[in-house]
Figure 1 (cartoon, rainbow, N blue to C red):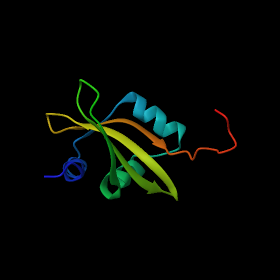
Figure 2 (figure 1 turned 45 degrees about the vertical axis):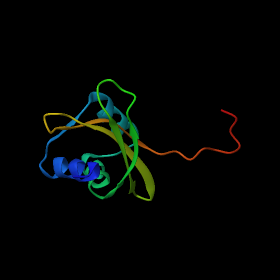
Figure 3 (figure 1 turned 120 degrees about the horizontal axis):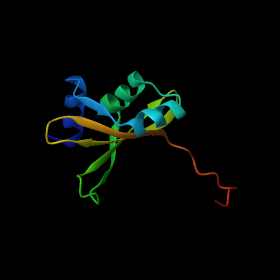
Figure 4 (figure 1 turned 90 degrees about the vertical axis):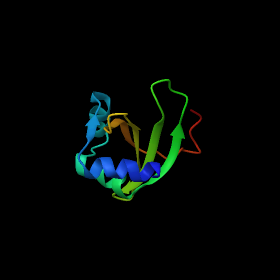
Length: 98
């Protein structure tokens, strides 16, 4: 089964756990649980990070109110989907030197 299907299956089964950091970032970007769930159910697998000894992190990208939102998550061996962080994708400002 594909990774995105496994992620969606965990969401549908309500086997999702949010880190405190993810909840803080959601609050900072005015995102709620329903919006994050929508990204996970309807977004696309955008990136995989396999450089973490704790396991592969997946980035699911989807739209919320005409803005791209990334949800960084990990599928645990227990079947739980751990949400590590969530954020609104910011466009790089071409005039900003940072």
